[in-house]
Amino acid sequence: MSDRHNFFELPHKPFRLMWMELVGAIGAINPRDEAALARLEARVEFATDVYAEHNRDESEWYGPRLRELHAELAARWLADHEDHLRLLASLGGRTRAVRAELAVAARRDLLADLYRFFCEFVADDLAHMSLEEGQIMFAFQAAYDDDRLHELEAAFIAERVSPDAMQRLTPLYLRACNVDERAVVFAWLQRRTPADIFDDLMGGVVANVVPAGELAEIRARLGFVAA
Picture 1 (cartoon, rainbow, N blue to C red):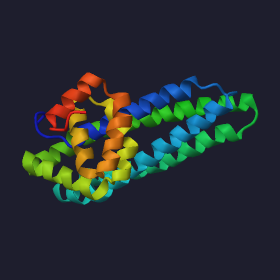
Picture 2 (spheres, rainbow, N blue to C red):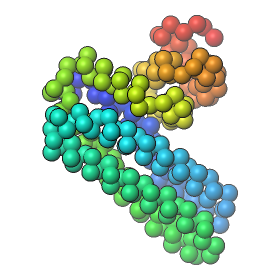
Picture 3 (cartoon, one colour):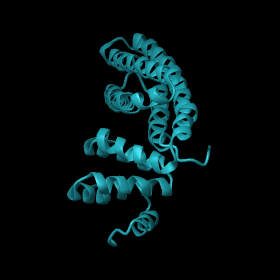
Picture 4 (cartoon, rainbow, N blue to C red):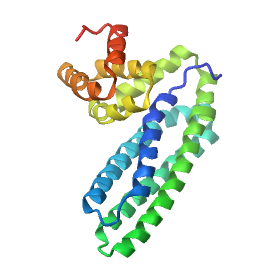
């Protein structure tokens, strides 16, 4: 079934990139650098917010559908999501505690603990993503043909992924994806965001992330008017 449509694969790429970049940032941060600690806190807040929303959306929308196909697998998956919400809250609290601590030596200890905690969370979450792309997706593939899988994916995006969420995640998607996947993201954006916001994204965020030649290729593929 590896050649079948898999609606978990593309959304996982930006989150994997987000986690990998945070692993590096936490491991390298200077406990004396107040500005860097403030930036880290903001990055962790963004990451935990968008990932918690992603988990809740999947649980509430795909969860009931998976339960009809494979109740035991659905229960395991939904329990994982609940556990991750708890861990995300803990991650945010541990990060805030670092900057709240004024003693540098104590900050070092808190950062070391944060780094270990976060690496363990990422390892668990990467395994969770593999479960989704494997066993859970196989359950959907066994029940539906690819046309129906595309319909489910489109319905999920329309009902659970707001234009605001798309804007927030667009830079991550573009940096994490290859040219073919970027074309898919642009098509989503064009359908789901107001024309003025889409034009701003294309002229701002997109132009700063996607090489000019590749951007021209994608625009041509999707029938956009030449810039």
